[in-house]
Image (tube, rainbow, N blue to C red; front, side, top):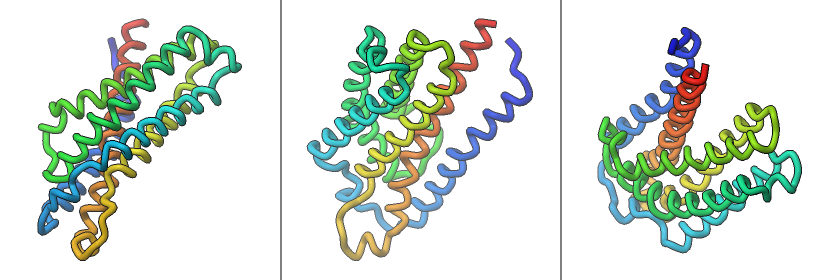
Length: 213
């Protein structure tokens, strides 16, 4: 297996964004005078379930837009991908990602992030969902690269949007006006997590491709 020079450059470029965001996160946390644990808690279960269902519906609509035809969406592999998407959306938004973001907002980020169980579970279910969609696309059409890239980008945007909605504090008051940094942290943290998910997916697909050559 040989890694080309341009692939190394791709990996380096992909890592720049989340690494810079981590450094910015740590700088913001260092300058926050206090961390209000009440603000750092996740939103109520109803909001998390609503976002989970919204993520599931939007993901299925995204699959529908990418499907060669409507019957392909209801094929065996399409139904498998849809069923797993329902489960992963609920687990990610209701449990894993919401709890991970709660922990991230209260501390600086170091190497412990990469062994955090919620971080690993979030990445696992995201990548598993994307790989199932990739397999469904391969069974539905010949040229899947563009469609899969569009799905990954759309799915990442949906994940970022939903997690930011849950993560940004809704309470008003002097603390939030003074500590605007906490709101910025709540926005960039989901981008950090989703960026690493995209990077890991890219690495895995390239490894599979290299071994198949």
